[in-house]
Amino acid sequence: MSAKLDGNISKHNQALFETTKRLLAEVVNEGLVDATIGGSKYDQFLYLNSRLHAAGENDRKWVKVSLQPGTVLETRDGKVACVVRPDSLQPPVVIGNGDAEEEELDPGVLFKNLSPWLVEDADEEILNEIALELGNSARNQDWERALIYGHPSHPYHRLCYAQPPLNQIQPSDIPEMLTPTLAFLSVPRTDLRVTGAFEEIIQPLLRKLEIPSTTPDRVIVPCLSRQLPAVDQRFPNAVVLKTVENIADAQASMRTLTLRPESDFGYHLKLSLACQITSALRTITPWTTCGGPVQTALLERFLPNDLWVFREVAAVSGGQDNFADAKHLSCILRDDLEARADANNERLVIAAALAQQPYNNTRCYAEILYNLRTTSDKQSWLRTYATRLFSLVLPPLARYGIGLEAHGQNLVARICRKTGEVKGFAVRDFGGVRMHVPTLENFGVNFDGLPPGGATLTEDLHNVWSKVHHALVQNHVGLIVSALRLERDGGWGIVREVLGGVLEGETSGKGMGREVGEYFLQDTMPFKCFLRMRMEGKYRDYVEREVPNVLLMDSPRWEEVLRTYQPTLHYT
Image (cartoon, rainbow, N blue to C red; front, side):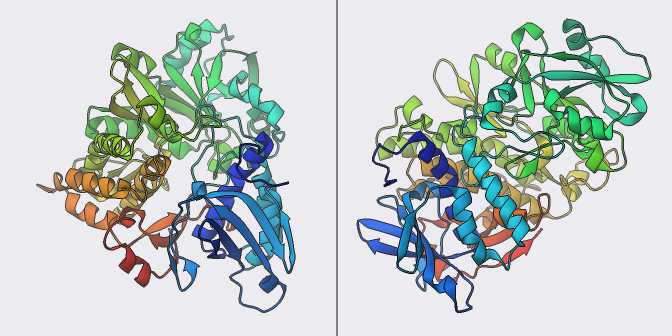
């Protein structure tokens, strides 16, 4: 069977390849394999080979994947030296062993073939687990709703992998997860950390749903019914008061719920879910529940008016000293901004959805919604979008050391119903925010109320800048530039120009706009190594690889950057 994208590839194989193309790009970008270019001018392939130098059977094995027409991948000493975008790849994928060749699109099978090349990076048990997880990611091709294809580069872009004692999730379980059943628990107050006016704010919802009352020494906590086995293990004194169906819809993250209008409740429920979704186990630690209201107050104080905040107003989590147990029963009450948007004649759209393509369509939603037909149309729209985005996200970084995790899922675009203009954004999910403590202390901020050891606070300014470059440039803007097919058509030049203009305005007084700009335009930047992190059991600690900075891709400096590039790994 040929897997060429000729319109006849099955839906099943398309689903497999969405994960496979991310896997193949990722192993190249993380330096886990050597990659070369082969084939003819009009039919090019990316070849993957073992980087292990020991002679033997590895020398006769290879994997190749076809490149999309027009793809340009720079090489140095014959090896690919730039970041490979998953969308640059297309079927077929061929496994070679000596003179034998076999087509294969299943990412789990492919990873098992790559595993002998990775024995220096992880043990066999972890490599086998990764193969299973890749298979899970490929099967779950319906769960992210508006984000049809999920994370732009992570091979776990659709992973939904339950951890014991939860039952493993099958694709047939997805409908229930999208409209999940809620359980309302009565939990001893002494077993919990309560942040803010949680009990007071949730009371109208409890009355509306006719949840039985409890005694003053206990607190009523909502949780996903699917999470109950993990709760039962760690909270033996919790009692289920009532379960309720068909009152909420899961958002893109799956653990955050929007209540139905008839509930008349102006908050989202963000709940613990012991499932690995992309890189993380989606439970919620006390660092996050306790820090949410504090971060909300800081963001409302320091962010521009057109960057709305999904306020986290109150929360509850387990009271155990061991946060690994405490995180399994948590609930954050977060503002639902739909009513505010309606009053402003706006629609809220996940920013990443603008770069997604409808099924079986080669044009992304931004092209369709804004009728972007020519390269000039796309360049003009990109300039407007980047200007609006950067003018809201970068000033807090340059002035106050506040680094938002501004990727396309955490930023929601505010789109005018009448004109279609992107009027601003709203920011949500503060676990990935980075705050530079010394800078904010200069503005009178006190962090004494937060539990020590949280990931959001740092003394390292470059740590803040690096995280913003990854989320905002490599992920958010990079996804849009790629979706508009402007990577080699002036897209990055527009991004650099807009970036420089916004940061130049942040150089007076104590603003660090010029320093941020210089950092963002370094020859190389850290690239988050998702697979290496999984191999080494890391999530909050990052494994990163220096790669040529995508911001410079179409600049006069690009050739020099590639010529002097030295790949290195570092840990943060």
